[in-house]
Image (cartoon, rainbow, N blue to C red; front, side):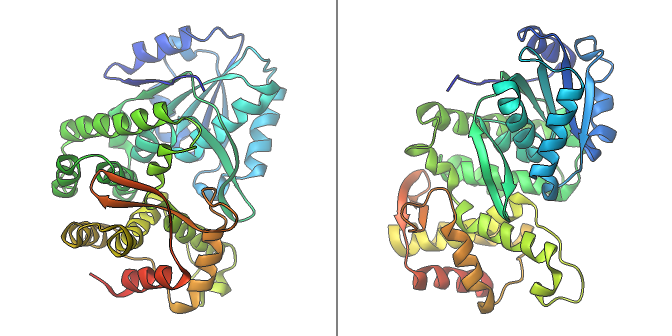
Length: 363
């Protein structure tokens, strides 16, 4: 897989002009969701480099990361006269960069694309590393391909357009990167003031976080080995996320009188970290004090998704669909300590349920 060019930008107009200029193209298209079209597109639409680009819009939020949205994008490309030599610019969060990357990777057997992530989550996770895809059959990222963007442009200007919850969602992936990197990075993340954002410090931390992912992806681009480190928190986290999606689609299943809502990806990952750090203490010797410090940070900032013992069979079933599994055995990435990564770990049904008990009752 081609090495991805990730650019930390302070001058968006010239950075984008350079990136577009490196992709010879006959036509260009900008993919937005309904939110980024309104909030983020005005920041770039006057640039000469995208003058004349056709804008394609899909629905916002992960509920729209579907085959129907993908088909809509393909149809717009086809009707807009896109060829194998056209260019797609994905302007949005992780849903847009995932779906847009997949659409570009498959249209005419692949056209070039550039990612301009507009959320912290997309900057540190979804837009970097070449994973593309859509949700399918109630499961996260079930269909997709590995294919890197020609360029990924990270500009913290967009972070000032975000609400606090979405900023927190991205921060959870940064916390994961800290846990798989160094104690200093992990400690800085736990001590950062999320109530009063220092964007200069956040920009530096973002750059450090992206470097962690880049280093791992470069070593293992198609997730055969160490790239599985990036799945810390995700085996349980994706199950939480899929359970919330099921509840939103079939509200009666949740037993709630009010219609449940899907949860943000980073919140689900944060909750997954709680369970998987507990399993790390139980199975690979992760220090209890560091686990409790991290868990306290998660609960103070992300709260908890309401689950009961009755949800355990569904959560376990959802975990069996994780793409890291082999022969139906649930596979985890755990830690022996901060930076001490243990991939391809397993746990019994009883151990997983114990971790879920801790999530529900621990502090």
